[in-house]
Length: 238
Image (cartoon, rainbow, N blue to C red; front, side, top):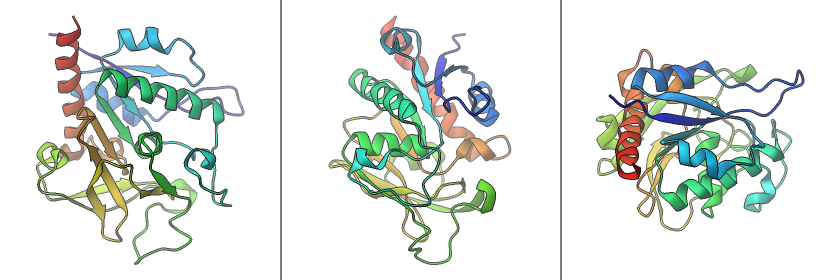
């Protein structure tokens, strides 16, 4: 049996000089049958990496530099990392060019949205619609309903019209790239997922499936699907 290698983007160096990411990503990939390989920001040999990796997970994290999407700085922005931005935008373009499978989560979805020409809302909490919370104080996750488009690929993966997603974000895609289709929404209208016909191997979701995947089989299906796609891609490349 082949166990695909899954590249996982991670945070840049913290004040202690350590790279890190949540173990939830690693655990979810392993449960699905993949071997996670963490990719630190600043890696210059991305072409060599891509030759060895079957699929990718773009993880959550700090805010993207707003100049990339014609946005403005907001007092709520946090965790900016220009090195991580550059690494992930470069890697994302290479993944698109080679049509490799990728699961883009929260910030990851925003990276692909911005790269393809979309725009982010700098802070959804400044002008909320309704009473839905997308994160709790101290960056704690909150669960809320996400409604799926019945004809979407995402709906066929998750096998449900409504799911409970765990969120920890204050930004979201406000203007989608040309050609992208929104396929999931929270009850306040925030775009929770999009698909792009020309990039069929991209799964992009705003919530954090890894947080609840151990106890929620619906969320684990996203990682299971990524591994299935990775195996297919690997067979084609060998």
